[in-house]
Image (cartoon, rainbow, N blue to C red; front, side, top):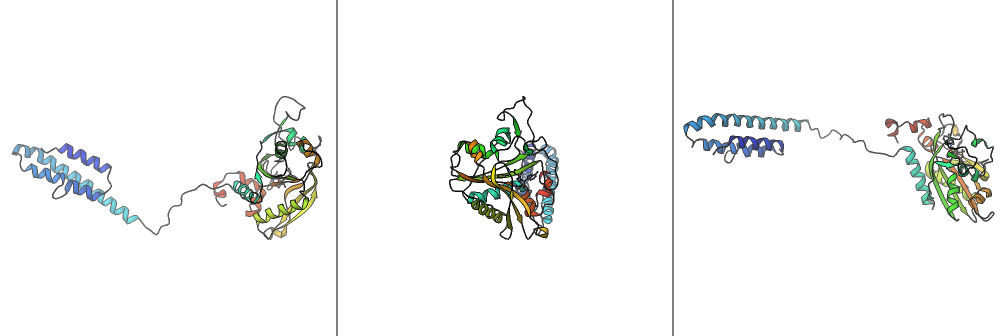
Length: 329
Ligand code: FA5
């Protein structure tokens, strides 16, 4: 018995899940076993009344299926005409590291290769860890409201309870020494906050990388060698470094390291980091026996690293999240 509705439904389903136009054509219009061809053959055996009823329906379904198949054939012909295999593929936007994350990772890799371990500390710190334990006198300018973001809380004079947004990564020195005995060599990457105006080389939210090496026979020359080695690994062996005396309450002697590169305009010297030999008062606050250990510490301003490596003209670009700018690195 010819079932026109069944053939129609079956075709509608097949066309939705179509993978190959040719086999669809064979299934319905094939000369020997096509479903419509078989239906037409059966029609001949029916009586006249049935033929007159089913004949036109079968004809119109055949037209419908032929048209649908013709359309599919046209579509596949025009899509293969369009495919130009010489056109380069559309590149997908892939993820990438932010230049600041990349700088941190590159510096970490260099220090890890020298045997340092990576440590972390909180961005909200006690006044004690940020200042007192680092030998800051009470009236040091860095404690001033101009430089430090204090966290609102109950009025207290207790430096363990007074909270600040850390102004540098150095408080992690104190935290680490309280729970570890020398010898050790650590670095501490992190974000720090300063209540100051921004310009092309200054941000109020900035990243630093602290270093601390403590043992019984660690000396100033070890520090100079380490810093020079790391900067040459990062920027290239043609850079020059020099050490200049300066003051930080938590180191004695204190120094800053300046760098010059043939790629800088006019061979200019640029301050890259603060450093020095750990002050014995800091060891005392950490609970170490005075005079037993020596160590060196340093603090890189890591936002200035990508600036100098890639010639970025303004530090503030690093926090703007402009993808067109960021995707260059
Ligand atoms: C410090 O923060 C000390 N804690 C560094 C230190 C650690 C000295 C251990 C000795 C021993 P200073 O304020 O100079 O020092 O900052 C260190 C570096 O951070 C600077 O050399 C500079 O590269 C960078 N830096 C400082 N202020 C800013 C700022 N506002 N924006 C961007 N980078 C800054």
